[in-house]
Amino acid sequence: MNESDYLRLLTFQAEQANLMLSNARKWERERWVCQRLLDALNIDYGTDEFGPGQEPPDVLFREASFEVFLVLDAGRRLNEEWREELQRRRNAFSLSQLIRREPRPRRISAAELQGLLAPTLRKKAHNYRERGIDLGELDMLAYINLKRVAPDFNSSFPPPSEYLRQGWRSLSLVGPNFARVLFAHGDAPPFLRSNLGRTVLFDLGIGL
Image 1 (cartoon, rainbow, N blue to C red):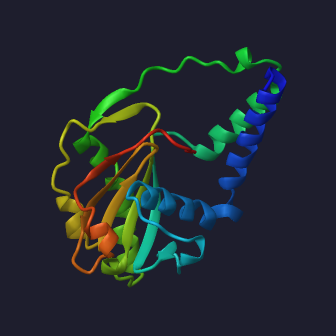
Image 2: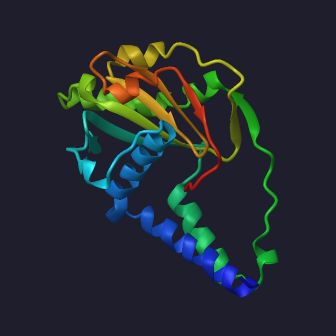
């Protein structure tokens, strides 16, 4: 593949990322996050096993009722990032024009990573209770997309006490190269209960 072909490939990938982030592809995007978790946990599945929920939940899969949410670095806007990146790739005449030096991510503990879930979970717990939604029927799933920090998985996750008190049935997280089921109650799907408390690390894969 010559340089021009590779530039076209990079531009195509950015176009696909922008499409995936559009409102029209919301459910497909949420399903993709669920599939990332299942892949990490080594769960076999067929695409016909997924269905849309009532928002909440976003995605139905077997016994699971997944409510998907995104965790980003403060101030980041994923849609804006990819729109800008698409323009950058379209305007480039050589690969050298696309080279950027990014600062090395700061290492954070597993406890800090877990703490990043708090703002969204607090807001959702409050809003859903006001709407009369039973939090005990929802399997929360956080997709972690961080550029400025990187989790240190040699550190320990603390008990997810605050999130347990909120009343969710289960809480899991998945990132570009890791997944973890933070908690899963007795009525949660078996594939979540059987992976409870285990951090799965895998090779860097496709991300947004």
